[in-house]
Figure 1: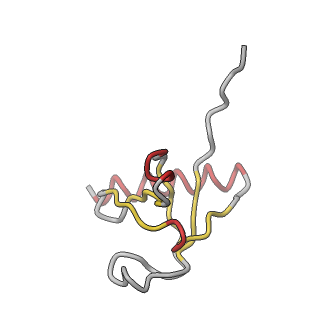
Figure 2: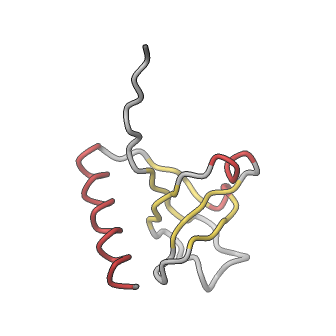
Amino acid sequence: MKTHKPSSPRFAICVDNSEYRAPLEMHKIYRVLPDADAALDGDLRFMDESGEDYLYPMDYFVVIAVPRRAAQDLAKSFTCSERHAA
């Protein structure tokens, strides 16, 4: 029987905000939210500072691999900032 290891949080850096200058900041790290349907359409889902989630074209970002410890620390910091935004 296969066991599924919980996936690590994924992160991406914005490398193009030409069509979304207001909501997307160049070179900012965004946490990618799991969304298989969005990925099939070539999009990534992110949560912004207001706590709302949005879809953006995948090619506007570079998905980055971060060490497990760094991913955990980043995920915690995103969760903390989301609570403060609410």
